[in-house]
Length: 204
Image (cartoon, rainbow, N blue to C red; front, side, top):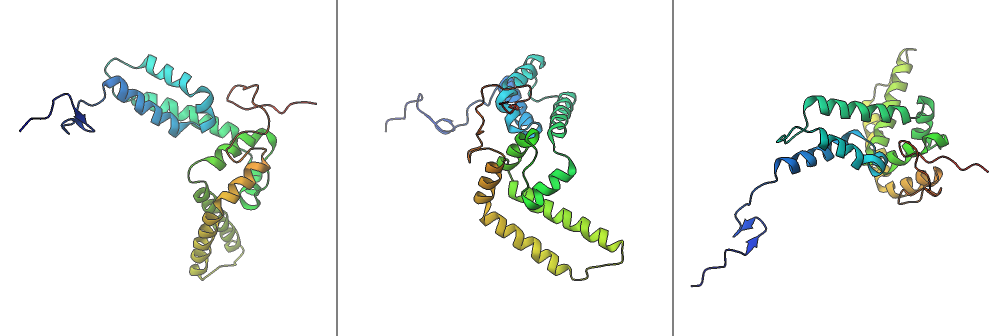
């Protein structure tokens, strides 16, 4: 019987045997990309992600396969600062979450990242539940209590199901309110990307 040629490799390497894994540099880059996706909003990664990744790779110690604790903390702190700086004021956020109110123009890119981001519907429903619980706590301070918890759990479950079924229309509706197409592209031509990626409203 003729033996198969040793040059033919299957998905796992030669004859199904796993080949060597990625080198330290590849593993470090892959983990840095994962860290940046966790820390920064998508728009920032689209405009400056490769620049920040290049800085992380340039500062990496030879042979390291994962970012150190200090690097991780620095990246997470930078991402949190950017998200907080772009986040709308509390009252605007409440109206946006509860009544799909349009946010001020300076926060439209935050809204876009929120709407097209992962688990948008879950975050939306969790916001409803959180605001409901805060309302109940405020009522309890005045002696008004709700004893039937099953009603609340039923409301939360039905709200999630209805929002999930209608999720595409909700996304399109909110994107259009903030002047974005269904794919997340802006109505305003992106001829000028400023700083963190925000596009200024053209003046007439």
